[in-house]
Image (cartoon, rainbow over all chains, first blue to last red; front, side, top):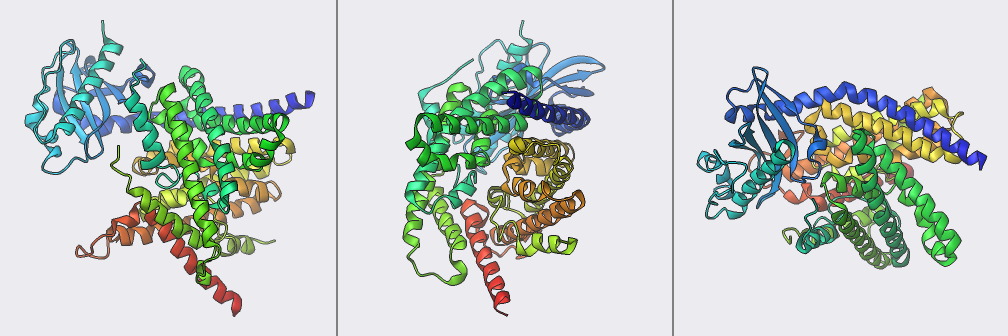
Length: 177
Length: 196
Length: 199
């Protein structure tokens, strides 16, 4: 029994050292990773938050239960929060659709941006058209999402709608009330 | 927030067994797949042992993730914690089976130590978290993965038993032929894509 | 034992992929392109180098009974570290390799070297062994990746070699192609080895 405890303590010690080392490496790389994640979405965020001059990542722990939402950003202008952006993954016809939904502090969708999609060229990929994306502008987070799907691209349009829905859900969960 | 529908669970199950078969399309668990598949009987034993460990490991790692890693914000310890959970689980299962059922131990015992380094188990537990499955979905995903693994390894063993007596060029004997066979099986499983 | 034999073992005589068939999951999974193969090879080499070094240094401190869990913790630490660094500095590769980065932990090659080499030999030898085995693994992955990419998309390292007229055999970059390509390459490796042994 005493030997078991001794062995357990040695393993615990090694794991603790490992945890310490990883904690240090994590603190060194976390900022770089965060900056990269923001940089990847920054250009797209600027398309619906023209005044944006800074952004930061929202702690993932806030919305862990929401499968479709991958990342959340807080968007700043002159030091004030002007809105939030959520990156979502939904399943389209040809694969995952990765997109951003911007919501301002008044609780209004200000725009969406498709980051990557593999929908059928000429059919499903019309979700990238400005005409379709503008249908989401102005949606109130407390109201219904009433957006017409594009005929011939129902699955793709619904995936985008789902993305916006998920973004709104998380927005209400984290910043509601 | 647990939104589960029977159809989504079914999709997870079918997808893990056929469409994204752990072995033939995700390439998880290749080592035992190629190593322990010379006879149908041993392949079946391996499949059962893996099923057992996968189901338990999925549930325990889910709890570890939720109530230790997420709670303390130390997600970067995931790999270490999960592999330790799997290793101790395998050890524990081995001890329990040895004490309670010598017959079961005889048939499964030899495979158990190999399961720690079976990447299908660690892969499954990480995928569960990555896909953000809830506990019910996690269990279904584990069952699907285990059935998919067992299906692939047993089918493969059955084919290999026949191949033992086939006359093939020297250079292809053994491993290369096994790989080509696996390739053809994988091709067949590719036919399931688009099913769900 | 000398450095030259260790090097030769890693590349040819005990080549982790073509002779020992170790670490097959990443070998098959990430070799859709030569670049991904190279990335996975280098990541694995980094982990192998780290774990071999630390384990050879700690070998007298680690109790024999729990050596495997201890090795695994050391390996997992280096894997996580490698993952963090890749996520920070090589994001494209990090995304392409995905789940196979944490799975380097269960690459039998690394645990195998810890058990059979690093826990029994001095640190300098273990470092050379890590480098040699890592290099042998990397070369195998790059070769397999290059072959699959060449037939599957007509390019190698993203460089279009076969021209636009080449009808890409997409099957080669899909899962079946991995098995088929490795099977044929292993057979060729066998032929070469068999010939050498005869002469």
